[in-house]
Image 1: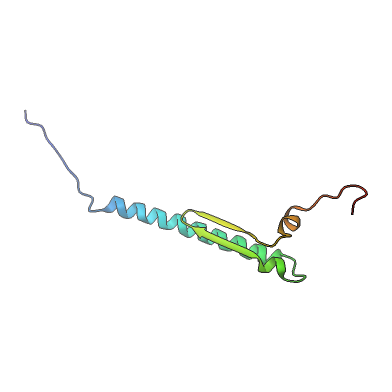
Image 2: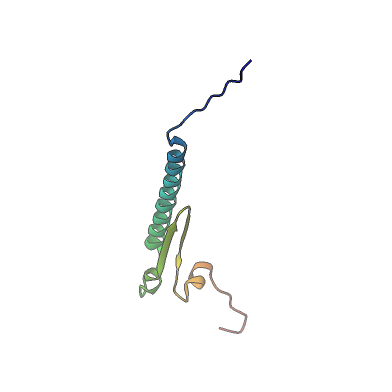
Length: 87
């Protein structure tokens, strides 16, 4: 009995589906980063505008970053400690 061999040609469908998946992930990441940045802009104190003007965002591929570049940003974001007797 002769062996039967069957080959299916997807016409590049698998590659196109991978491309579509990557595009969808990049779009979701970009939108999420934009939403986070807008939320931070809306809630950041605007005494001098230094902190809100230092807000930066990046989205590359499937990763994104949102944050402040101002020197005092960590203190505003996370608070600060004061030792008793040292103010």
